[in-house]
Image (tube, rainbow, N blue to C red; front, side):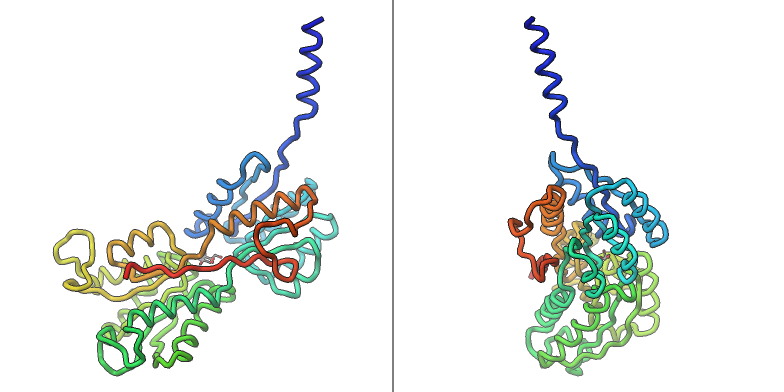
Length: 334
Ligand code: GAL
């Protein structure tokens, strides 16, 4: 008799066990250094409540669309999407709407008119213009916070000669960062001459090759390298080391800015490896693109959406009923 009750109890337990909902997490390209790290943070955030399956879009919207279709057909309640092409999510939103599938987009912001197509679509990201304003502040610090400029103005002409490494064309971060960093300096009374803007798709190896080219074209005229992200800044540093713009004379793996040759390179993202390069003096500064906080916001929002609960209970503030904005932070070792 005792055995019977035990079995019944076990059965009830098994029967009542709530299966974790399996939710797809689409990443535009796992080769992207920042997104690789971001994906891990999202996965680390998902306690017992959800099972996230990561799907790599391999930088192809065609591949990502096919995967999204498959998951919509599986009738999952929610899609978490870092789109390959933020400008072509219209059809994804329409399809999800038809099937009642909710969406959280992140990192690559859809157009406002597409976001407006459906009530159950959200965006978690950071305001790219803010990262550019913080990057401009780092540049002002570098030039002594004085519009007359300090010794970082190598040729002493009172003008900042800069080259810019730009991320992917059309990406909201690449466009806004490139434009706003220059605008902020000008509005703050600084004279800046942009010697060149090279598109290097947020990618380290592409940026290394681009920097080789920029050095060949502008050489010692370059006073600062402004990069839309850390991966490209690191690629630029590789090139600049090869070309003798950094000389670690005592070979200790670090650049002593008082005694050794260096050139300021400034990134955005705050990758671990970039932080190491700041410590060792190769990277002048970066702006932290807070993927940890974004990951927390995504997972918390996902849980509420899956359970169909009111999102006003979220611990992050929501603007216009759809957007969660996470702040950037300025980082240097000055
Ligand atoms: C940006 C980030 C870049 C790149 C891009 C991908 O926010 O700064 O490094 O990862 O997202 O969409």
